[in-house]
Image (cartoon, rainbow, N blue to C red):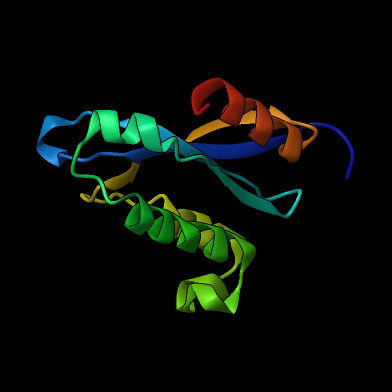
Length: 127
């Protein structure tokens, strides 16, 4: 399949105190139905996280975010959600939550190469 295709993406956010609505972007998830693509990139800067929230359990956060990778990959270790088709996995991961891990609104764009677009979004908004 050649040419540009529509993709959807959302930023993954660490929100230590939901009531304050402050967050740090810790990742990005991208889905492109026509290219049969879904992936997530995550980066936890421990020093920055601890400066933002002294009570953060970085290992617990890392474990929680590991499940996002497993679900994106369709890995059986990701549980029943990982068994869903790509679109359903993306929708489940970007469903509204009120926890310390949230996501931005889902945005759309067009690209030829989802891997490259994921990397660009990751570098610009997460790193």
